[in-house]
Length: 207
Image (tube, rainbow, N blue to C red; front, side, top):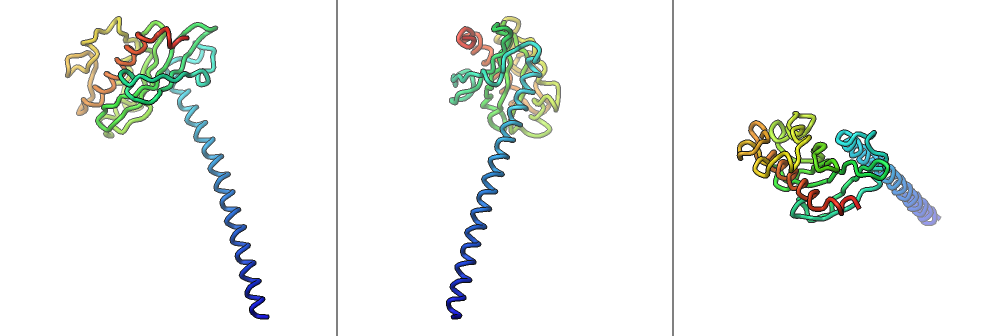
């Protein structure tokens, strides 16, 4: 009799543990799914906010995030992977586009940039999306840290020569950051290559 009671208690305990494990797994999966969706939405909103800083929302009428295209060109875009291009149009006419390019040679590694270019090839602006540069030095490329990044607005291949697309220390026209030259040098180069890419692929990008 005692053995039967012990076996029954063991069976009940095992069943309860199995039910608890199933419940826990379900809750974890549910939480992960909900959290993942919130993270994705937050990332999309942050990207759209950055895009609208460079390309004001009242200048275009298409769903910017939905109509992106993917392009690949490691020589100009800084990565072997496909990057996103967001195209802003008004009544079907090109207004501006923004490229998610990479500056691969930052001091702390790759720097992810958002480079916005008006349809005429002039820079609408540049923003840093992600980097690992030194706090207090290289992080001056962030718009929240300094106004360094604003110097790109209005620049183009027409009004800035190839020789000028360098930091001043290298004989160019762009400021470097105090105590940090490698970081701004990498960003200036990446922005210049983005303009070259746009110049060479303008028709394809707007198809």
